[in-house]
Amino acid sequence: MADTVLESRPDLNLDVVRDEIGDVRTEEMLVNMGPQHPSTHGVLRIVLRTDGEMVLEAVPHIGYLHRCAEKIGENVAPYQYIPYTDRMDYLAGMNNNLAFSLAIEALTGLEVPKRAQVIRVIFAEMNRIASHLVSMGAYGLDMGAFTPFLYAFRERERILDLFEASCGARLTYSYITIGGVTDDVPERFIDVCREYLDYFEPKIAEYNNLLSFNHIFVKRTANVGIISAEKAINWGLSGPSLRGSGVKWDLRKVHPDCGYDEYDFDIPVGQGLKGQLGDCWDRYFVRIQEMQQSVRIVRQALDKLAGTPGEYKHKSGKSVKLPKDEIYYEIEGARGQLGFFIQGDGSQIPYRVKARGPSYCNLSITNEVVKDCLLADVPAIIGSIDVVMGEVDR
Amino acid sequence: MSLDWKQTDIVFVDQPALGAAERLYLPQIWGGMKTTLRHMFKKALRDRTVVQYPEQERPLRVEIYRGVHRLNRDEDGRVACVACFMCETACPAHCIHIEGAESPWADREKYPIKFDIDELRCIYCGMCEEACPVDAIELTPEFKLVGKSREEMIFDKEKLLMVYEQTKNLKPRKDPAITGYPETGHRDRVP
Image (cartoon, rainbow over all chains, first blue to last red; front, side, top):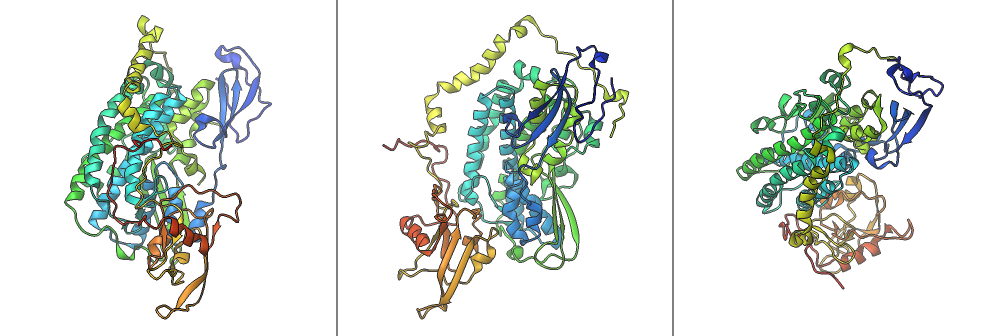
């Protein structure tokens, strides 16, 4: 194979002789995929250097959605920054709120009431289900299956109804806040949530019948975009993209916060059921299995919530003073390890806020995987990595 | 930057072998369509799921939804705000601008002569509502907000009080019940 030289800018004059791998020599072409392409999941632009149907190089261009979220964090108090974290990974706002709140709590040593911790686990896991539903539905859409998308949104709608009843918003929740949650769960929440889980669990089997094991879908995703475990670790992947390669790593098990160690759940990893280990299908299926595990956690947490009365919020959550110290805190978000670095200077407003978005780090592997694939496989690979551009650009 | 290839990095991939039935793809299409068709002919389920939006509307959980602001009046019909600037301080988007003045009434020291909220700048986080010590500013479930210009979308005191007059009977509640939960879209068509 010819030495492929990688540069940040594709070199038009680079004359790669494709004859070496027995292909017909054709003219190279630069193709812009995005920023308005439907399967780039937002405003991601990928410049593809193609040779016929083969992709020689893929350079993601990001920054279309940049909103200076980190700089804003240096100008507002921590509790005011919570709504901004909602808008990073807008499909899993609860997880973002949770990561930032936990970071501030760890920095200031704030004690979170027991009931708040249980509520946090319920909402983080419900949001993980909602996020994976979108990921699954949109992935089906990329692969040409329209129906699963509608079904996934139907189920997600009811999760959003529960969120709306609890915090009053359907997307930008700002529910989990520093020191607890903004409000207690509404009355009848436990019953309705359990009702929903009973309704939702059989639906996972339906998705599997409809999409996961459908041969047309399997043909498009199995053996495509293979990431070996070693490569996944080297490129800093996390979340389902990492576990799809068979790596057993989940921060909920590694350092359990919010009392995750009290719940009984498994970490699904890719097994190479339909093709090579670490292909697109494995990454997709890890998400499906994770939904099942999240249902398990929420069920246990609901039982626990019924037996945990008390406060849902620490009183001084809004008036915390940040010590002259710094912290980096990570949790397992819906897309991977979501971390916040916060540096305090003794005042109420942080000196520096830095977010580590899992989508941003996962996106970095694009070129490595997309290279030497067919053009039609690019949406399959991008979709299986599951990037949310709001989080990539922040 | 050049990458060194290792022999272990190269994965040789074979196409999965297909049987005659699989090569037709028809059974697979039928397998997928089975679920779709089953859902298609369940009218009750469809009515519950689909909302024909402009004609039909979903009942929102009106008690807690975070929509347009309103400025409440107290029982004497005066503006309830005491111009304490708590909401302006709490607002993460800096969209509230208040000018206070000496109050003409005996029971409070200050009242707002100017109370502007930039509805385009607002991020509807509900922190003003949370911060208000006299429950003067509240978020209503009204979310259909239209304006022709930016100036029009800066709501002043009169406009915010007008929103209160329109949404008076929707009292925001702290702990709403989850009502009519499975029938999200099940409502008759509005003529």
